[in-house]
Each structure stands twice: as structure tokens, then as C-alpha cells.
Length: 220
Image 1 (cartoon, rainbow, N blue to C red):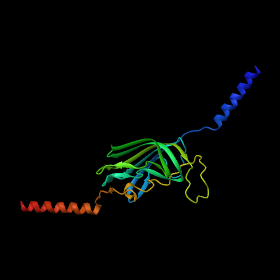
Image 2: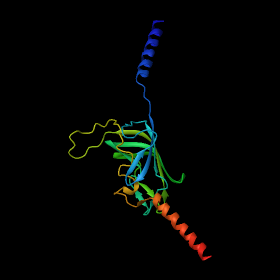
Image 3: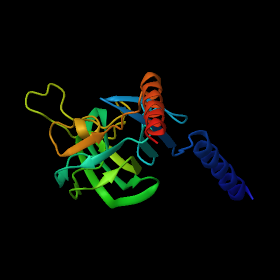
């Protein structure tokens, strides 16, 4: 009986200690609207700036062009990294992701990778190959972070890497090198902005059409 009681006590202590330090994965939703010229605003959802992901966490990151604007691939090729956050902590990250590009809510491109490695200060896609002529107005990255390791050791580094886990803190709403058309390292994508006439322009157009109608009636 004594041995049984001892085992029950030990089991209770182990269960209590496990419950005292729960490990919960966090899933984030980042929704961003892009207005062109590097301007973006956060839509309802989580803010990537201020969040710190650790192994096991995941996020769904959506960037939608404003109104009827869209991206157009003028020169096909590899774009690095098309959709990846810049992060504050240098290291190597491993994760699984699916990248989806859409035009008018219809998927026009998809890429899935498992066990993808990113180094040193980005988290998301690496090089993405896109064909010339592709158009899209929405980008979505569904990403699951498996691990982030402190192993970046540049020349002259006064503090050698520990090889242990690190956090991953995004630095902005847009990809590390900016929106696709602003990526200096991977040119070949334009951002097409459709001009909307000002109210005064609409008034002038209506007046012009009215004058044309009057002239047509007179000729008749």
C-alpha cells in the first residue's frame, strides 16, 4: 500500500509540473491592404509588428491590392524573396508554407514547400519563379514555423551564436525588400494603378457629352 501511495504522489507531482508550464502554439492572422508606392495599412486581424513567433507557431499573411490595382510580371524569372517577413533575430528558420497568388479572387499561382530553410534575417518564401505576363492582386502566405536556431556567426562577431532556439519578430507589414515592384534585388514586376477621374473631371465629361448631344440635335 505504501508503494502504491508513493507512486500516486509522484504521478500527481509530475502531472502538476506539466500543467504548470503549458506549451501552446499560437496562430496569427495578418491582413494588409496595399496602396502602392510602398504604402500599406493593417486590416482587422493581428499586427505582425510586435509579435514574436517560436517553433510551433503559424500565421496566415494576406496582402491585397487596393481597389482594382494589381501586380503584373513584365519579365519572368526568380523573385527573392517574393513574400517573406524581415525579422530582427538573425538565424536559420525551418518551416512549411503554401504561397497563393490570386486575381479577382481566383487562384493564378500556387507553391507549397515543406522543410524550407530561410537564412539569415527573413521568414517566409525563398526564390519564387513566376512566368512573364502573370497578373495578381492578392498574395497569401500560410506558414508554419518548425524551428528558429541561433547559428549566424558573421566575421568579427563579438558574441558567438549559441545554437539554441530564438524568436522571430517581423519588422513590418510588407516583405523584407518591400512590395514586389519595389524589390531592388529582383526587378521584373510592375504595380498597375488604374486612374479614377476626379469629381471635377467627371463634371467636365458630362458637360462635354451634353454639348455633343445638343450639336447632334441641331444638325438633325
